[in-house]
Image (tube, rainbow, N blue to C red):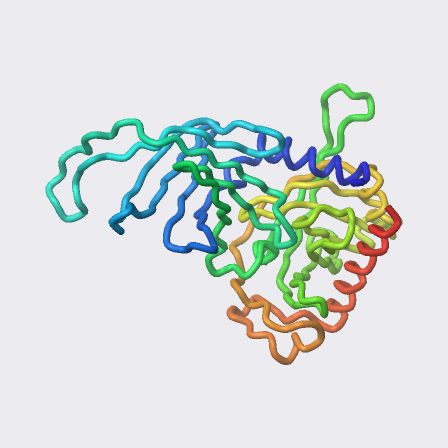
Length: 322
């Protein structure tokens, strides 16, 4: 059974995420990894979502459709349902312009987006069209992993409600710069950096282990001694431009989050992405073999690798106690 802290985390993700951070959570290109060649693009602005679908007809000719509507929530999924629309003719790129014609209502499409999708943290979409349901995943392009999104500078803002429950909140911010990369002995990638707003205290981010109660696909971030001798822990889902989850400060903040003694936080990128697709080798081999594509990125130091392994071990240990 999921513990209280993790149920709160899921509530945060499907509440705060879809209400206040929805501008980029689902946006991107999606394709069927088992049948590449067709797919769709998603873009959300305010409460309106647009879908552009491209595939082929039975004769092998390309075809494209659009659909625009609001997004709903069903059983924890963000669900888009609308009729596809496709013009019968229109202008070509190098032709004299004339407007599209025959843009009549077409086939219905249903897309159920599952944000907490698995150990890789990527977003999955179940697409139902023409009587068939297929699984699509968001394209990472030149990113090797969702954790790759972190390689930048971020502002993480902890939202602390007033103890008198009058609707006011206090916002506590940390600025973190992620600039180191590596792969652990179990094959999982990790990133390291510093809390630049707290005397450059080291910070380590790993995927939570899949063999426990922590939600697969979420990322664990730990920094020691960020508030005097107290440590801070963040548990979140990562997107291209935002992070959403819960955090706690204390002598054992990981246990606090697992017990539900945590507060909501959101993160926003405040710098450009440093790196793409460079996780290649496990463990201590990273120093010798890791191929770095940009000058800002560093191979993880032995100390950083030790910290990342220790964080994964602590998460496993805590999971086994639930």
